[in-house]
Image (cartoon, rainbow, N blue to C red):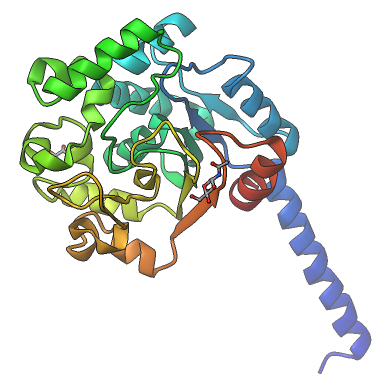
Length: 304
Ligand SMILES: *[C@@H]1O[C@H](CO)[C@@H](O)[C@H](O)[C@H]1NC(C)=O
Ligand SMILES: *[C@@H]1O[C@H](CO)[C@@H](O)[C@H](O)[C@H]1NC(C)=O
């Protein structure tokens, strides 16, 4: 029998060790990898540079890596339109694997198209391990329409849009235009399944790649943020894995009503039932969130 004094001492000891462990954990925060959107770069001070600073202020000592595709920020912006996504993912995979700071795993935040690119990375690149994936306005069922082309000036944007409308699934367009690689035409579902070199592949549309399923299951949490007043993504429900019902472009269906979910081709049903998919929304336009929202809803919930 312990005396009550010994018990109290013992309890203090446990409390102190817990505090010590918590302190230890906070001294070694899980690193974060950011992937920017279309027309953006790793490091602009008005976009991901600012986000990186906020995370670093909120979680002292954290390592934040913002991926850069190419040798400088200009190439990084260009590549967000013109470099085959499959190659981008391969390069980022290699880059992360060679980064010793990430060897024990990392959390990831994708901005717009960066959201689906990071999901592709999670499915294809299990080492190092991605833990939480936060997708801010990512288009997980693709887009059917490009009302706004980011920083690309208007003439080039119109050209891009025309190319996508007329020949998104032609192989020379698929391999050259990033946005073609997640173009999802609900009037041509078969063409999409057969010819989309990126999105249909990571969504296990044509064949079920068990490796993709298994790797995606290894995520602790998949956080899908939808911008309710998004005028840049068509349809915005794609940010929650929703899309048009096949064969038309008016009526929408949710992830839970889709064949992808019902047949559980990607393991999303299993993840959803295990409570691993968090559906968040914010009543603003594309990527319009403020610092308070970012801190409260993302940083303190998923990164600390
Ligand atoms: C599944 O994906 C892995 C990783 O990308 C790839 O190596 C493999 O060939 C794919 N398998 C099938 C059946 O497509
Ligand atoms: C934002 O979206 C909500 C829900 O779709 C809608 O009720 C609201 O009117 C929209 N607000 C603006 C400013 O467009």
